[in-house]
Length: 350
Image (cartoon, rainbow, N blue to C red; front, side, top):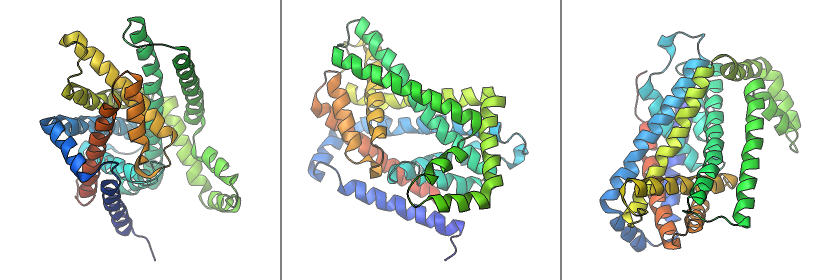
């Protein structure tokens, strides 16, 4: 069977639909309890779901910055417009939620769709660069969150113990190692390096050699494009990084909305709301760190929930609140997966 782009699009669509069904059937609570949680959230569901319009908008602007910086040798008239990138951003993340090891669905889909606007090599390098930036920003989010935690301990808001100190130190070392590896990837490209790692896996060496023989020139060009963005267009690189980082800060507001729903405002007023928002950043930071460390599970079933419970408990809040936050976030994911799948069937202009 010849896999045309339309057939692949339909395959991705069915995968997303199946993911929604699986997620609905794998809630850790009954549908009666789920309905009770939704009723408790009430009108707060609107800003909780709606804030992701802004999150995905920042993601799309970040990716657009990379595409423009990576495709300077192409005419601007060939580049996709913001709304097309925005649609592909939402759909790509919907597919990432739906597949094990996030990226097995979203990134190939983005490459396939973007190649309708620009050539395959630029489409591939632009998607790889954005995926690298997405993870790079994650590490900066986790790294800066350590210092937010330490700042809150200084003012007496959060505790610090030897065990907590050791964990924070390990996270700092983990992030510094990641920064070093990313710097090497940005300087030298990434595809050739990844293929080298794949060739070491049992049974894949011959396949890797054949793949390299057929696509060596394209791989070399893609790696050159990856290295060129960091080396030649620093403005696009750092603009993309800042936008990706800001998207995680904005994402934290959905947790703040849920804390406020439970009457947790750290004393109220501007100071109290600021502390609540900083707590929300820490909750999202440690939850995403935990979820990404065990990211091979489909839709991270059970991992995200456990991460929310642990991170919220670590801040001295109740486990029940952690369960509520995880359930509402899971509902939000299902809604946005459904939106992403619907957008797959929407024809957009450049």
